[in-house]
Image 1 (spheres, rainbow over the protein chains, first blue to last red):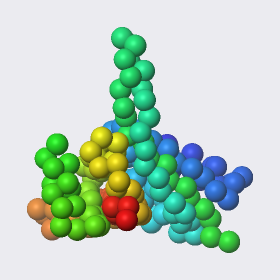
Image 2: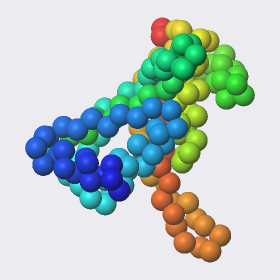
Image 3: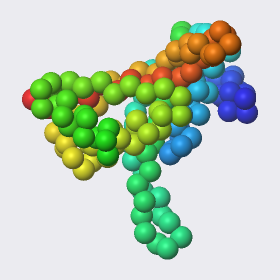
Image 4: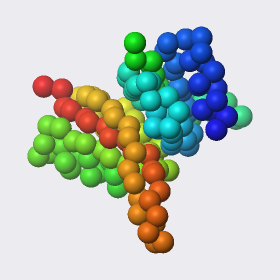
Length: 77
Length: 77
């Protein structure tokens, strides 16, 4: 719910909001977007979705790849 | 790795493969696609990504919404 509130707040000043997540949080980001679209902001739609890989620096200095998602949401004009 | 092997096998007979996942498995699906694209099939690219919601029927008969992802992969021609 905190994420949904943040997105709704962002839409009060912007017409486009980007939701980003990494690793295990990707599933939660998709849940958040789906709940937002179905229950809270029916005039908002998914403009594009991108997936990728970030390199996370571990404590021992090694790099660990971690998946990312980026969902761009727009308010229908 | 089992998922990656399945996708590679599917590409031996098809030029387009759809990876679908629900709930917590969404993060794993993104990991699978990213590892495939970066390490195993560099000629494959993401054609489109869709997210949605399925209704799962619980044991008590109620419906529970669960997020979904669908990634369409194509081999560059």
